[in-house]
Image (cartoon, rainbow, N blue to C red; front, top):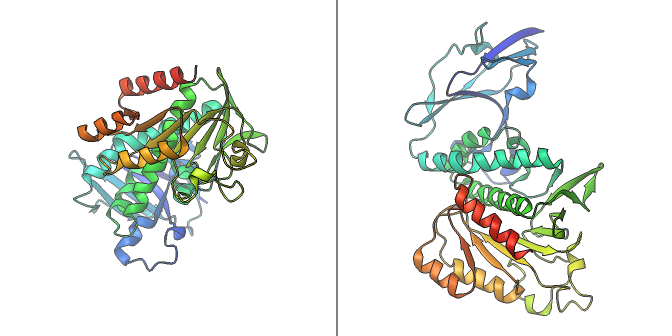
Length: 361
C-alpha cells in the first residue's frame, strides 16, 4: 500500500467515474455519446484526511488503477477535461500533465443554467434532508443515480450535465432530470412554508422517507405541520390499485407534478371514495412546474388539470419568465403564476412561501 496525494487547485476538479449502463436501455450508443454515460463520484468519499489546501491523501494499492477524470475551468467559463490515472499526480499531489481537451464549445448556456439554478437546488435539498433527518427511496427512472450521487456532491452535476447535454441520445434525459429536481425543490419550499416539524407515515429502518416515484400508488411524504397533517404527491396519478373517478377516465396519462392536501394518506387509493366516483375531499393545491424558459400550451395543459381534478388552488411555477400572453390566459383561468422562482430569487421564493402558508390557514 502507498500513500497518494491528489491536490485540487482553483478551478481544477478531480472525480472518479463509472459508466451508467442503465442509461443505454438496450440502445446502441454511438461512440461519441458514451461520454454522456459517465457517473461522477467525488474523490472526497475515499479521503483519509483533507487539509486546508484541499489535498486528498489516499491509501491505495499500486496495482489498482482508479478511473479518474479532471475538469479545469478557465476564466471565460469554458470547461476542459482529461482522463488521468493515479500515477499522473506527483508526490505533492500536483497533476503532472496539462494537455486537457475542451469539452464542448456550445454548451455554455446549459452549464450556466445548471451552475446557477440546479447546483444550488441540489445543495438545498441536501441540507434540508440532513436537517429533517429523512431518507430517499428513489424509484424515478431518471433520478435514481443522480440524486444519490449528487446530493453529497452537487458540483458534480455541473460537469456531468456537460456530457449529457451534448449527447444526441441523452440530452432529453438531462431535461427530465432537471424537471424532477425542480419539482423536489418546490416540494421542499412547500414543506418549509407549512412549517413541517417532522415526516411520518412512510418509515424504513426506523427513519421517515420520501417515496420519489412517478405515478406511485403511495404519496411522496406526510408531514406534521402547524396546520395539521399534510400529504404531498409527486407526479400524482391514481394507479391500478385505485380506480380512477369517472371524470378522470380517458385521461390516465395526465399527471400533475405536485398535489398537496390536508390530511393523512399513505396510499393514493385511500384518497378516493369506495365508489371510485369522487375524491374523499378536494385537492387543496395542485402545482405544475415548467422548468423550460417557455413551453407552448402550458395554459391548455394546466386548465385541463384544473377541470379534471378541481383543486381549490392551482399554481404554475417556473425558474424563468413566461410570455405575457400566456400569463394573461392563465390569470383568466384562475391559475396563479410564479415566475423566476429559483434559488437566486429570494423575493419570488418568499412570495411563493407566503402564498402557500396563506391558503393552508
